[in-house]
Amino acid sequence: MASPHLFYRHPLWIRVTHWLNAICMAVLLMSGLQIFNAHPALYWGQKSDFDHPIFSINAVEDAQGNESGVTMIAGRSFNTTGVLGLSRGGDRAFPDWATLPHEQWLAIGRRWHFFFAWIFVINGLIYILTSLIGRHLRGDLVPTRADLAHIGRSIWEHVRLRFPKGDEAKRYNVLQKLAYLIVAFVLGPVMVLAGLTMSPRIDASYPILLEIFGGRQSARTIHFICAFSFLGFFVIHIVMVLLSGVFNNLRSMITGWYNLGENREHA
Image (cartoon, rainbow, N blue to C red; front, side, top):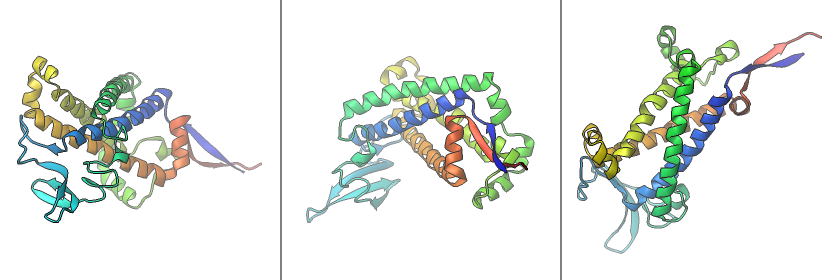
């Protein structure tokens, strides 16, 4: 007779901060796109150089009056009609389905963004403090020498879509550890500080932020890059969840219990 071998993998505070973080990131990303649409270009340095953006998304009109969406990256332009610049949502950088609120409404987008940014920061601090107090950081996230020595094997197993089972599934693998550490202690703090650097009032109180990021426009560009790095992390994270067992992973992140496999018992 077979029975599931359940292992208590995620304590309550990890599950609460995880889901709260997921909600915050979704709102922050969509409201951030709303804010970006108000001026769909990025620059480097202290001031906007309208003639030489390093990234922009616009709708352009040719001599015959036909409109198309154009995305420019470092001087190279790409036709992105239907997706960016010009889509069924109209003449706007990111389409309406990707922004919060749905319609072009900068004031509300900014309110959503700033409100959930504070929740994101407080939630992140709670996660870091509880990780330190509960030894989650040292015991579960910091890779050991043995982990790092076998990083090549871990990458190869991921490429082959072979995921750990049994006792090995009780621990994060080295790729998970490195990804979580980079997101929590590098990407998140840089994104928050870059966001604060865009505030004139914060700059007046802490001018060192402008020196660190090389100007307000550079900070805006770094903030944008960090946001899309987060999006890339979440996409990979969700794909791994789907491939390694969506029901089992969701159960562990909702109830804490993860099924390591089946125990065989003889009646």
